[in-house]
Image (cartoon, rainbow, N blue to C red):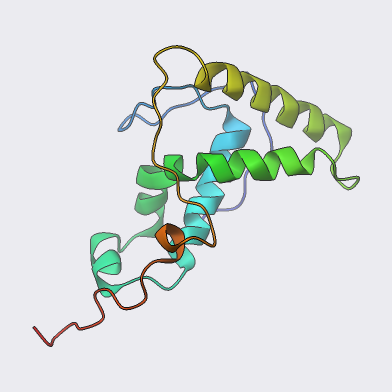
Length: 134
């Protein structure tokens, strides 16, 4: 995974060319979601997962949007931390406000989210473990 990017203006928006979200995601939220997708990739995954996604960067590019909810919660939590610079807090707050306006507008669709410490995130440790026995 590449180096963690610094916060940018929440007015700079980006969606991936290969997947257009039905909402606008400000860069601070997207970057946090990408980091979370990279963390997800790093966990113990099945051989089938690794065969499907041998490259972490490709996985993050394709699947970051499934980590938006956790990214939003983490960024919101940063607003109360004394160690976070005021400028970063302002950028986070602006990004959260902008995201909320986009996510709650008519026509916005949900994207399935993965949350740490759930079976969907952690995975079934027995699935795909019988490789070579079929």
